[in-house]
Image (cartoon, rainbow, N blue to C red):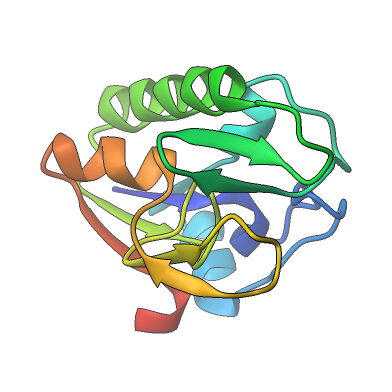
Length: 137
């Protein structure tokens, strides 16, 4: 079983209130091979919402508000869902402050990328769950 970013499964849950559909992910969910989660929504953030980026150890939105607690809460809930469903692999939205794997935005809101992982991706990796992005499919 895989856990996937809900936005890749066609669910309108990203910060803009849109999805980022990936047909392979949509098909996996339809076949019952994957479970879709949105850590940001699970953490209580609204949709749409102010975009956020990781700055050091914190997650800060573009309005300057610290939303780290929401990201951690939602990522822990998404991790629990993943573990409870026996997920051993994740397909997550690239560059996201929750789901990005390997590359994330640098916190300047200038579309500049740096090496790093989103909050949820990092938690999955720490539990030994393989994480890839839609770009790896």
